[in-house]
Image 1 (spheres, rainbow, N blue to C red):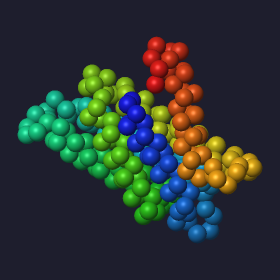
Image 2: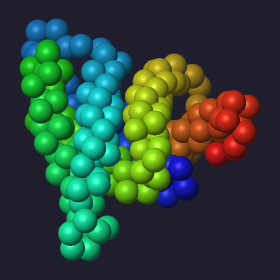
Image 3: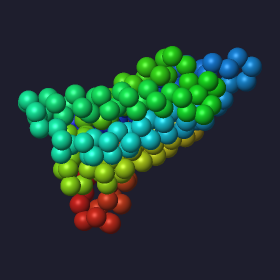
Length: 188
């Protein structure tokens, strides 16, 4: 994952968290906790991302017309949009999803797919897509948990918000890249 992909990845995590936190569910009586909504939405996005990657890997040998990078990007976007739209019919979607969350899911899915699918070596595409999808889900859920714990911590006003969120995500990346170095002999 190059630095631009990491920044897009962090942007996707932040968008997911902020939108899920801002918009309540459509149930008026009892709203689900933010962490449950984030877990539901992030798992749908991860699942859609992985399925889109598998479909892209399946059809990549047949995409050889026109300008290859352009047609691959259009194919990635098409698969992502179709699979994300189908994920809107998941169980309990009426409880957890509203129009704004569906829009966010489309944007995040497109960001993740377009920034990774065409850059990954086709021989390792499925493995990398599964790793990135699970990593996205893990980062979003861990970030939501950390934000919940930070809400009760005495944090100075000048660092609250986006600076602290980016610092938290970079610390996540640094700690997990240590594990990557231990198990796979590569850092970052």
